Length: 248
Image (cartoon, rainbow, N blue to C red; front, side, top):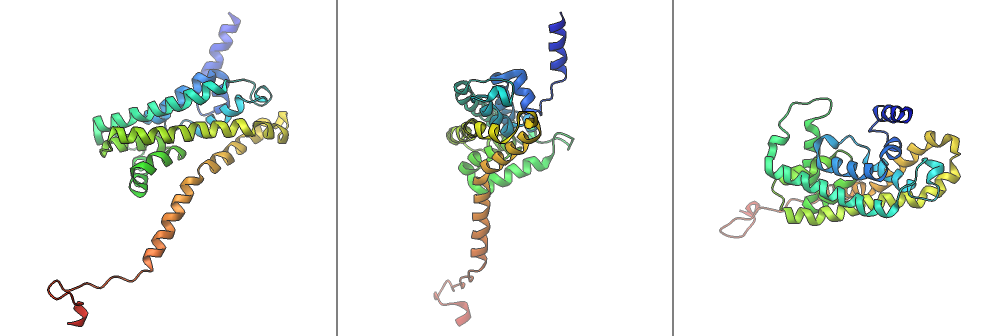
């Protein structure tokens, strides 16, 4: 009875934004669920997807017990996480195609803001459908809203699925493997008694590195705009003679 009471108390005290607590409470299944909800349902945009994946990778390493107090299966993570992220995004695309802009026709609130949708649409227009679907995986909030936006504006389901698979695998397995590979270095640098103090900044640094493709694309776009701004405007030709109007 005492154990059941303690378990219920821990569940009630659970914070869904605490990636470490989520792993300790739900393990691999928690990772799968968050991957699906964050990419498939609009209410999932606030979940800690990047930090959860990185810590899950740490939790599958040889120093998992020392750092997180739990041990996860790397195989289950590498297979299940991308599958759930892909399935969730595909659901988001379907809902966008099925219900259109009605999904976003709601007033601003603490959770929902129209600027989230506008940001997703901005990336879709800026990078084009294929790049947007892949790169959005590495941008919190955008990776939730871009999927229904893609469905709303009519991106074909087959085309979306192809790039959804690419982005889902790169995002989930890439960050999982980064956490797994760097776990030993983290344990060497951070004393066990200070792990909670320094682990989150380390996770944020890794997430920032994982978002480098976004920054590269933004820089390329900025450089292209500057280059085009400096080009001279082509003279307008007279339709009858082919001569420049200025020469008339």
